[in-house]
Image (cartoon, rainbow, N blue to C red; front, side, top):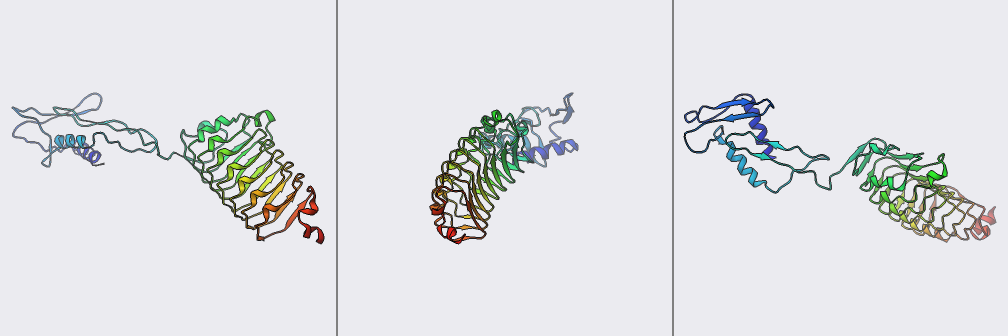
Length: 326
């Protein structure tokens, strides 16, 4: 910064035509070539020519600073800082810079949609929402552009309700999101029939709204959500025909809204809710035909809304008190 300031001051002074030199030893000459480069030349009968501004030997100062900063790098945001050349007298001094450090944040402003070519390479932050809705040509490998993404301020959704199955099958994992930590709004994965696991979400620790997983036929488990400890909105796990367990939710202690589990035909238990102590809204369980017990809700101390359950295997054993009352 000191070096850059000196160069700026030097240029400003020269442009204004104010030059302090040893008039007794040389007659200064100032010229500009066809490329716009500014030259200051002086002739002397002996010794090294100097350029003095208010008594300061600028050339010597630049040389000293160049030696001082040798081997050091300058910082930039997301681009390379251009190389700058100093004013030339009897010798030339060139100031060089390097590219930004590897840990520099790269921010995308606005909603991310299917046009992934608009997303900057190495994006780390999205100030907006992440909405890949009906992206018929989306592949798992396309998500690798988000391999450094850590933050989404808005909502997050990958959704393919209207797309033909052959396109939905192309997204089998979300490994490209492996560094994502925080989503400010809701989080939703829906109608991705080829999605087998969500282990690529293992680093997510915070969701600001609803957690929704719906109609992902091949999804076996939700182990990738083990970093979540609370959900301020609803938790909706519905119509995931291949879902065997929800153990990945074992660290969630509170849900601010409803908990809804429906039409998960292979789900045999709800042990994934073993740490859950409070539900702000309703608890709804329906059409989970293989579910034989709800021991996973044993720690729930409060439910702010209604308890709704229907169509279970051996339903009378799930909530015996409820069956007695109804």
